Every structure is written in C-alpha cells, then in structure tokens.
Length: 135
Length: 108
Image (tube, rainbow over all chains, first blue to last red; front, side, top):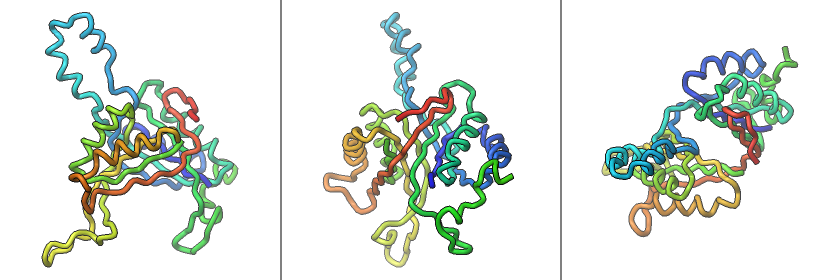
C-alpha cells in the first residue's frame, strides 16, 4: 500500500474531489497548508537590478520578501500498490495548468492500515479505493 | 527521496524557513498543528495545557541531503544554546516517487 500526498492549488480542490470520486477513489483526507516552491527568486527583478543598479534601492525590499508562502491544499489518500499510477494520473490531469505552482505529488510507502470500525487490516481496510475496475 | 517533517515552535518557524531558504531548500509546506510531547503538555500551577500549538514543516529532499537539512532545522529551531523542552521533533520517512503537477514530470 502507498500513501499519495498531493499538494495542490486551493481552487482546484472541488474538481479534484469530483474526479477522484469519478475515478473510484472516494476516500481522502484534506488539509490546508501554506507553502513555497523551488522558485523564491524573481529573475526579472534580478535582471532589472543588474541593468539599473542606481535605482535598485527601491526594488530591494521587494526582493527581501523572497520565499513568501502561498495557501495550498494537501490531499492525501492510501491506495493499493497497483492503483498508484491510476490515481497519480487522475490527480495530475485535473490539476495541471502548466504553470509553476500547480503542486507536487509524493508517493510514500505505508506498512499497514487498520479500519477502526471493524479492526480489519491490510488491503481489506482500504477496499473502497478500488479505482475504475470496482465500478 | 525522503520526506522530512519537523514539528517546531510557531515562533521559530520563520527562522527555520529562512535558514532552509539560505541552505538552498526553498520548497517547504507549513501546516498549523496542535500536540503534546512526553512532558504531557504544559502545567502552569493548576492549569494544564494538554495540546500546545506547533507548526509542522514538510520538506522533500534527496537522501544525500538529509544530514544537511536536518542540521539546518536543528540549529534554527533550538531555543537557547542547549535547547528546551517543546522545541519539537523531526521525523524522516521514505518517499518513493515525486511528481511536479505543472509538467507531469517524475523525479527520483
């Protein structure tokens, strides 16, 4: 079993939930988070400063804000190994706008799952995450 | 790749974020959490604070960068020279795959 942790744009959460249900992955946990990606430096600004060092004093305070945090949603779900690729494809398809800031998807191993209601363990505890073949 | 999750004091989180940025790890996700440690929360006279506010910082990096990132977090998250109860914990878990949604690209 694998845990899929996807960090996505806030305004995509509803479409993501809908298409996850349509794809046969109803169970998910969502949290709000703040984050930044790998591009805290604005290269346009840097170039402007290089071209015009005298007037750069006005721009410098803006640069100091590098690494600002943007609100994001984290959606995480645990699926059987053979559904990982399908789930990732679904998430990327809905969330891809092609611009930086679309987010990341991480795949982490999960040792065991236990359903609290029945005490079932292993794949039986996540039998609702059966992807498209369960429909 | 590995996921480094650090639970730190809320007042220290911006210092940790800054030192990660300076260390070359700009990508961080921050979540507000509440929790307690082995001191069972905080006791001030008759008042017991069972759940203390903390912030969880999540960074995904390559395995060989682990020690460097952990040290950057430890040094900036510690209170005083020796540290204090409540400074937090760092957990490291494996990440098998990572995808960038905008490009659909797979990393590691």
